[in-house]
Picture 1 (spheres, rainbow, N blue to C red):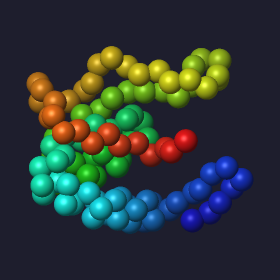
Picture 2: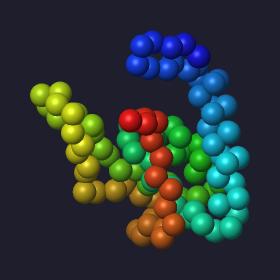
Picture 3: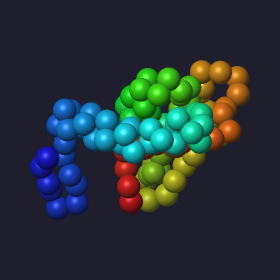
Length: 101
């Protein structure tokens, strides 16, 4: 892992190890039926969402968001549509992304 003033940089191996660590923390919730759908926030959450969906055999949906507008002012844009595997969403949704502000 490398650090730069405001950011941490991980290798792909480190990234997947962190996803595995997260999956272990979520395992009990999945087994108890407290999570039955994963929504990843595109683009950054796509890899995490895909990995967790495969590990837990849960349906994956993708919501497109952007944290910047065209003039680069901070804000949040959330698309109204969700791309999903099935016609309906689960009722116990885990939302994943790769950023924490």
